[in-house]
Image (cartoon, rainbow, N blue to C red; front, side, top):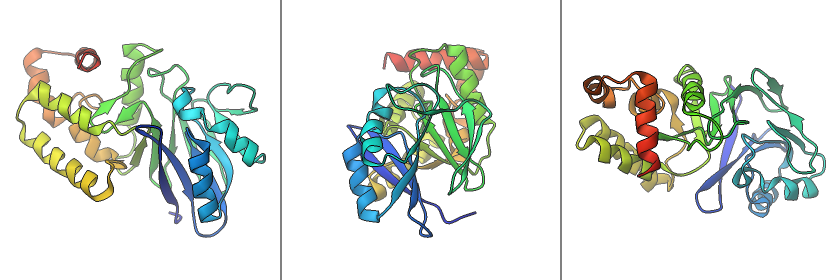
Length: 254
């Protein structure tokens, strides 16, 4: 494992963009830039040069900073699952492996939130950038895909290594927690998860990153068989897809 560092950059109201770098050189990677000026300030402060920008999906709150960064750093290479306005990109899709100066990303197609959505997995450094498909205790809304597509996309993530550190696109954790409390009522396992989340928020003022193995135990959107909801699911005789549909539709109206 190399000594990669992740700078979490707050963007807009509740977005996160990410800067990946190490202390051995000035190269860096940007993921899902929303506000270029904020990111440029961080780059200049750390004396870093962006070599790559990766985009997880086409929504403006994950791409609106790309053009400003390209103007400031014309050498930067853009990797995206779909076209971005007039900017030249390297299109990426399921199964691609992209080797950078700092690491290697494996690309997984995860449609549902959008049809073009992908996640970036760095197995060597145990990093997973999931955009808006997965959140702590939740998942993304379905804007372009289907329930089935989103369920299948989350299943892909469910089957990844437990020790991956997950970086998502928004800070939605407290709202997701309130939703699960509303559905379940008092639950000892959920209470323990809540304590950890509140500790993270108090310490870092954010709830990310989180460990995928922990999320598999507590997030029913990701894992319909997680212990928190096992009795609820059994009592209602839901299949995994039916259970996911129930949760997603209920959350949409929460």
